Each structure stands twice: as C-alpha cells, then as structure tokens.
Image (cartoon, rainbow, N blue to C red; front, side, top):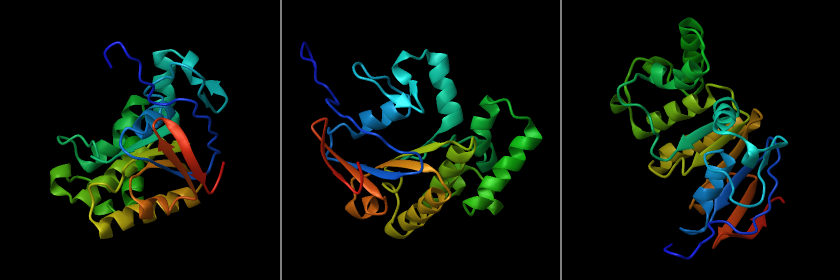
Length: 213
C-alpha cells in the first residue's frame, strides 16, 4: 500500500494432514483468500515455505506449478466459474482436455461424475439452464475430474439458499468420507461446523484452532 508493505499472512505455521476436512474462517482482510491461493499454488510465498507432499512450492517454476494444480488440486468457487458456452459435459471435461485425454474416455468420465453429483440427466444442458445448486454440482464434478488429492472450496455455499447449501455440504461430506482432503473458506459458523477442524485467522495470523493442530 504505497510505500508500506502490508503482509497478508505473517507467522502462519500449519500442517494439513491428508484426508482431513478444514474450515478456514476469519473476518474480511484476515488472509483467508491469500491462504487458499497459496495452498492451491496460485500464489507462491514471498517468505517462508509451503511444502505440498514434501515438495517446496516456492522453488517451482510456472510449468511445474501448473502441473500440480492440474493433477493434484481441485477448485470449487463461490461463483461456480463455469464456461457459459459449454455444456455440463464439456465443463466437466475441461481439466481432462488439458491432460490430453481422448474424447471417448473424457465423455465417460464426465458422465460418471455427473451421475455422482446427481446430474446424470443434464449432461447436454448449459449453465444458464441450471439452478445455482445444480451449477455448483457441475463445478464440484469438474473439480473431481482429475481425481485430485485435495479440494479447495471458497465459500461453496455462499450464493445458495439454505436447503441447496445443505445439499452441497452433504456432497462435500461424502467426498471427505471417500478420502478427499478438503479445505474450505467460509464466513458461516454452521457451515464450518461440518468440518472436523477449524482454522480461525485474524489480521493475517492464526487466532485459534479448533478440533486439530
């Protein structure tokens, strides 16, 4: 900010174990989005280290970071971030296209995931033809396309009504039960309560941890 450096995160030291389910909470400006961007290899730390499966992310080149995002991390956004011109099937297939899957294999994987999230009959619909909850289900299916080790969810129920949000949380719980690591940013205490652990940030630092270390 001008000539003054303002650290978004400072002195944060955490270990997220494989297979765990974390809610990341805190007021606006507390560093939640920065932390999620670092965990997702969208940003690299300007100090300190981020080790992902033993690999020092801060020392990697852009191509290596892209490969990690493509193969190991799934992103779920509050605004869904679907491509409006593409069908449900084509949106789900996007990560597979960049991995070089052939058309038949990609279509089969998309159909499998659409069934998993309850949208098997909507494969040829476009996002504008779906409800908000259905669009978020497509986004989750797309995040699962590459069978990632870790799912990063940024306010995944923020644009949904209560009943639809509950359906999405139930789906995330099922994915966690199946072994996925889930790190979810949320402002809502009842949503955070669905996770096994809670990390509370304040002014770029850890305020408290509930349910784990």
